Amino acid sequence: MALENVSFRYDPEKPLIEDLSLKVEPGHTVAIVGPTGAGKTTLVNLLMRFYEVSGGRITLDGVDIARMSRDELRSGIGMVLQDTWLFGGTIAENIAYGASREVTRAEIEEAARAAHADRFVRTLPDGYDTVLDDEGSGVSAGEKQLITIARAFLSDPVILVLDEATSSVDTRTEVLIQKAMAQLAHGRTSFVIAHRLSTIRDADTILVMENGAIVEQGAHEKLLAAEGAYARLYRAQFAEAVAEVD
Image 1 (cartoon, helix red, strand yellow):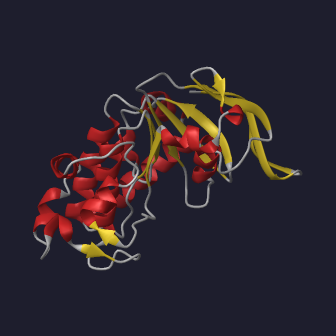
Image 2 (image 1 turned 30 degrees about the vertical axis):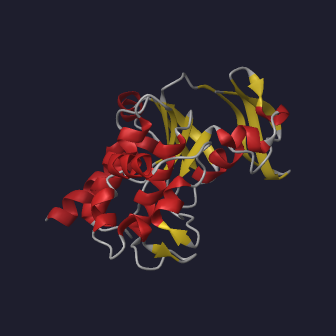
């Protein structure tokens, strides 16, 4: 995937993304970081064509995504977001949703094991046949995210969009989510909206956003050495972590 001189603006007078070029090699990870409200999801929305670019183009395997149908584009992209979407149906049906073919119960359970969801599912009264309502009542926010990770494993996408869990998820489940996301991203082109910088130090490229604009991009060590926005964010989070321990 490549972004070629991409620009985007809601307001003609206020560009959010201006002349951004980025080539993402197959299997590489791009992390998007920045303070709350920085506009981290804007770039993802452009990749998914929820918004159209104002200038430049985004290509997938050399094809301008504007020339692809949205269904064609999104069929190859797996999304795991904080605001998970589950529907009224069994857990097994929710995991199987989005698969390009009929899947077996064994495949559903294998995907759940890969996503570290199998253990908690089996503690439920009806296991994989437990019926959820549209709100996903009966399972926690973190468990919902594990279900959507299992769904992504089963759909086997070429590109991933991952939104890390925030503090609303308990620590144990957060660790499981991090492990599952890392396993899911392995070998796939991934875009990670990162909230904890310690989890994305190994990303191939880190995009730093402030006030809706990309202000820095590069690898972790390079950005730390630049003593810019990323270094400030990183040190601030490190100080918070130390304060919590104390």
